[in-house]
Picture 1: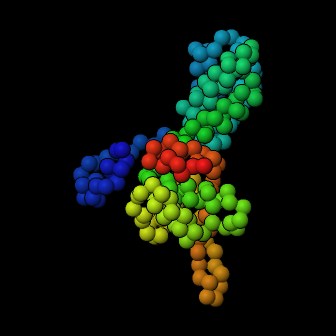
Picture 2 (picture 1 turned 90 degrees about the vertical axis):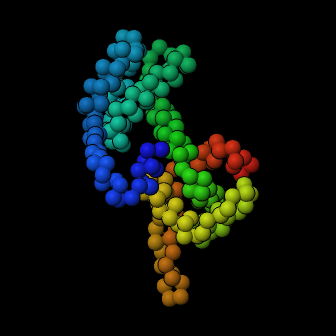
Length: 217
């Protein structure tokens, strides 16, 4: 909410706020390991974690985001999985499954924070990508399907240019990649889009929005 408020302010108003942004550097594997070891002594009984659990969790997160919160979430989720399975120890396989689950939840949370039009644009990419008859997902095709979705949920569709703007922003967010192609004489340039996240995660995010009920098969 704050970010959207901030973006809507004029440059002159933003300058008067005299804001200071604080950036936290990502943790490396050794630092994450130390953090997890400290948390583990508080949350787990002695011997509840196999020897490779904390080093593996630290390595996985360090190679990705370096987020201590992410590492703690994975360790906690792995412990819950082991508890549900009624096993004596949290093992490597619990960590790997927990990592996938935590990543999916984060992606889902980020997706559901998108505007309705951005989410429908991304969903159009997902549907086209899952269609085996579609060779490549172009902006024009995405916009056509997006407009059909808007009509189905009684939303006023935006222009193709607006859809492209949404796709560009979502590419920056890591949800998809866009590659420019050129068909040469007469064909012109166009963009081909490919999801960087699981299409099922996009479908799941769509299903969470009440007004989009019925779009997901």
